[in-house]
Length: 113
Length: 112
Image 1 (spheres, rainbow over the protein chains, first blue to last red):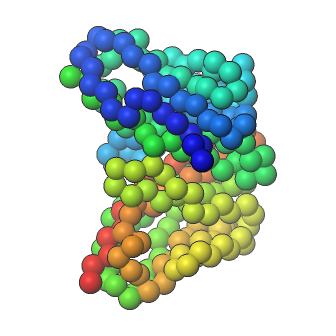
Image 2 (image 1 turned 60 degrees about the vertical axis):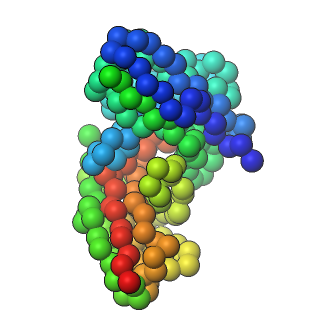
């Protein structure tokens, strides 16, 4: 029952370093999402992929890039990390055509010093 | 721009009492979702409300949707400690291709 798997779970970066957050789902879902969660801000959409081969910007895309590698995998890259990107990142997927319900990974806690 | 507002943002509840929390949104929507998050954990889906007048119940929680008022309520019956968590509502704007907008969440704390 893996569902949505994110790696790494924790990461500390220095300002200017790059890194990639990996996300994989085994539910054969078409749509995948990256959100960030900050205290008092709820979840804000960074990028999403409605289907394999497509990606679109969400509410807060600046400083991030994404790749929909195949139907299962959706990665989020920080090219030059900044302290403002310190956050908890959640990957989610959705395949329920009728409900559009999202299923979330466990989260990746990123600290940028 | 779709805005989703939840209130109150924090609610201290007494065990055994009933409470209602609210989710308002700013534009037409065809889906509303409630999620629960425990501290340091992921989000767990509670309810999916698909139409005006929809009501869903699970244990001590009951969610309803009024699309004309652009309002969803989450009613808590006889609060217990296990219900302490943060509750998010999320809304999908009509035609938005499954992209959800989340509220800021309501943190519920149940005290003896």
